[in-house]
Length: 101
Image (cartoon, rainbow, N blue to C red):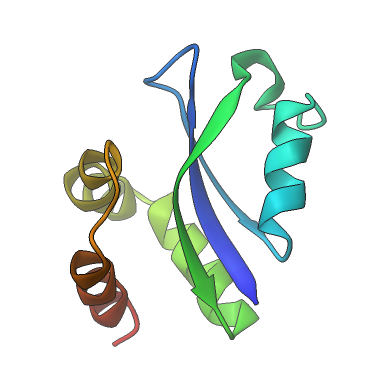
């Protein structure tokens, strides 16, 4: 599986990081261990959203989209706002369905 994820800094809640990984648990561990240049200064990080993809290209395209201006707007309107608590399974499936069209 290929994962696109969003992290929020626990110390600096306005700091958001978007990334891609094939091993989500290990990648989060590395962010929190200070092994990433950008995320090191905003530790600790909390996983607030992830999406799993079977296709690497689709995952990379979604990560790229989340880093674009329209992706940031989508993230703020649909993902981060919802991620302050758990996203319901129904809402998650709806979002995923729209993204994979």
